[in-house]
Structures are given as C-alpha cells and as structure tokens.
Image 1 (cartoon, rainbow over the protein chains, first blue to last red):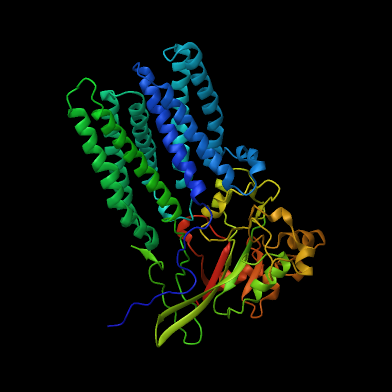
Image 2 (image 1 turned 90 degrees about the vertical axis):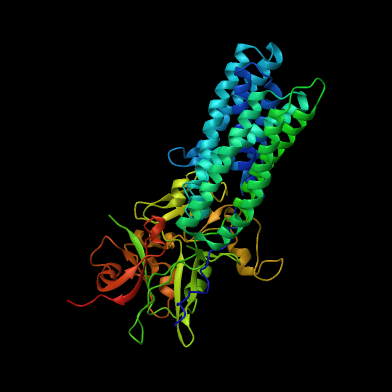
Length: 313
Length: 218
C-alpha cells in the first residue's frame, strides 16, 4: 500500500506571535467586567446591592484596556483607534468604551452621593449595562474577524465568548457578594447556575464544531487538553457548589452558603479566564499554506495536494 | 482601471532566494523580516518526491482582511489594488497581522541589526525609525511603481517601475503587471497557463497567482 503523499516544509500552521497575555487580558478584563456590570444592573433593578460589584466591573474593563495600551507598538497614538468604525470591531469596541466609562462614573458617583437606591444611579447603571453588552459583542466579533487564525474564525466562538463574559460576571458577582454579605441572594445563585450551563453548552458546541469544520492540529490539541479541566473544574464543580448553596436551609449566622457561592463564583470566573488565555496564547495557530497542485515539470506530471498540512479534519 | 498583480511560475522557481535578498536590499528590512520570502516544500515519499518553491508575501488582496479590521485606517487599498500601510497612523495593534491569512505582516519593536548591537554603515544610513512599533509588509515596491509612472514608465515592463523581486529573479519565474490590461504579460500568462491562488478559502481574493501547468490546447 502506498503511503499518502505529504507536504512538509515551511508551511504548516504556526502559533501566532503577535498577541500575548496582555492582549488576552483585554478579553479577560473586558468579558468579566462587562458581565459584572450587567449582573450589577440586574441587582440594582431588583433592589439588591450593586455598587461594589459595579465598581469591580468597571475596574476590570479598565484593566483590560490598560493592558492593550501596554501591548500596542505605538501607545501614544492610541487615539487613532477611533478612525475606522465602518468595519473594524476594534474601533467599535473602543468607541463604546467612552460612554461605558462615562455612564459608569455617573452611576458610581450618583450611587455614592445620592445613595445606591437613587433613580439616577440605577438608570445610569442600566444604560451602562446596555453599552457593556455592546462592548462584549464587539469583543466576540474582534476574534471572529481574524481570518488568519482558524480557531478564532469559527462562528461558534462568538456565542461562547458572549456566554463566557456573562458567566464570568455572574461568578465574580458571587465573589463580591460573598465578601459583602453572608447570605447570597437566591437569584444570583440561579443566575450563575444558568450562566455556567450556557457557557458549558456554548464551549462544547464550539469545540465540536471546530473539530467538524477542521482546524490546525496545534489548536485542536490545546483545546482537547483544556476541555475536561475547564468543563470539570469550571462548570461541574461550581454547579454542585451552587446547588448545595441553594439547597442549604438558611441558618442564622452560618457563612456556609456564602462561602460555597464565593468559591463557585471564583471557579466559574477562573475557568473563563483560563479558557481565553489558552485560546489566545496557545491555541491560536495560523492557517499555514496550502498548495493545491504541484507544478508540472520534467516528468510532465502534477499531483494534487493532500489536505492542508498540519490540519486536523 | 488598473489592478497590479504578481504571477509566480512554480515550474521556473528554483528557490534561490534572490528575490528575498533583492527585497531586503530594496526595502532595507531588518533581520527576521522578509517581505518577500520563498516557501520550500517537499511532497511525496521517497523515492517519489517532488520539491517546490513558492514565493509569497503580501498578496495585495481584492478584499483585504487587514483593511477591514484595521482600527486606525493605516492600512488601505489604493485604486490600483496595492495595499499599503501609513506608518504615521498605525498604532501597532497587530490586528491586521493576525487577520492576514498569508502570514505576510511583521512588527519590529526595537532596532535590530545584522551583526551584534551596532548597525553597519549601510544599516545606519537606511534605518527608518517610523517602522518601529508598527506593522510592515510588502508594498509591491510602491515607491518604484509611483516614481516610474511619474516618468511615463510601465510597471512590469520597465525595470525602474517594477518591484525589486521581479527584477532580480534569475529564472524569470516572477512577473508583475496590470491584470486589467489584456495585453500585459500577467494577463497573457494567466490566459496561457493553469494557475491557482493560495488559501483561497479565506475569501480575500489574493492578487498573487501561481502557474503550475500550461493551458490545455484546443
């Protein structure tokens, strides 16, 4: 039996060398922050405590954008990022950051001065949450627009990134709540449970679709290795902890539900951060080069190229 | 209209890298940066092995992914199809470099020299700090095209108006010209030969064509 022809030299996918952990931090901070702002707005609407969570949320987004500032080659020209809203999701993300922080400052300031239950503060926060949703959508599309990295180009990544931001926000809301109060509100536990289920489903779908559609083996290897850990520790275990926290009867003075919720929240958020970090710094293989035909030279024959080299199909 | 394209005849390319060297000389790119490079590929199993050399670089796509994602409009496509970068606007975010399906873009953050910490005299003379911290790539030697056109020359015909890699090619494997001119060398080559474009599934419409066989006769 003849071994299949193979292509070897110089054109296999390689790990993208451009975006490192600093760029990943933009997606980590941006996703977590916007998710947290949205959950904090929900908390404000149901009359729950929202101020600390909102503060952390805005700080996370600012952290992410600050890391981008450190990553770009010409940071003092960063203003130029606003020049191309017609087609660039990066510009759109940056444009949304302006009203996001403006409304954030208004909400936090009004909450501090007028009280957390003031209508002005809550209205500003709800508006900020809407902008935050747009910001998160832009982030998901920034990756989707990258044609050079098949693992990011896969359309199923977009819902996975959206679900991840929401889950990280819901998770961190539990952490902030655990620090502030011994009794987490039941709705926040249910929300985290739903968010973690949605994220698990979205990432599993992304993983399956990427395998089905074909992608560089280097990307698939990282995602295959990551999947059981992220799904187990970042979804299964927190789900169990959340279910226990919901099932526990309220006991005066017991911090157990709060601790369980806090740990679950931290695991949920950490799983999202890990997944994004690995996706951006380890699973981001380029396309490589595919030549469909070899040239016809002396022997007068050509052979078609096999499947793209270094791809898992 | 004009649409400049590159045609590489894979039957002729011998992988000598003269185009790579000519590009480095013409554009003063630093070590590690190759606007024009030649991929070395091997197909098959011993003893039935074929080796091929594939010149590549920026493909000056019809629908360039880099232009679409660029947040600063530093990367733009000229009416003649050449994709260029304005180094004074680029913020060096690398979004374009990631979006390129052809690995054609580079970024250099620090001055880099061929021999140690100090530049050689030619390196010092041609050092361009506007290229630090920004994305860079093949320009189809756009300065040669523009100055040639200003002098009434024809890119792809007159060497002074033609990319350095094409002028330097020892085997005549590379041809440059206007695809919208039916009488240009590139139009004729594409009519007379079977050709493909790499990574076409990326959907960017590259302007780099590879010849692999003559067109079947009538």
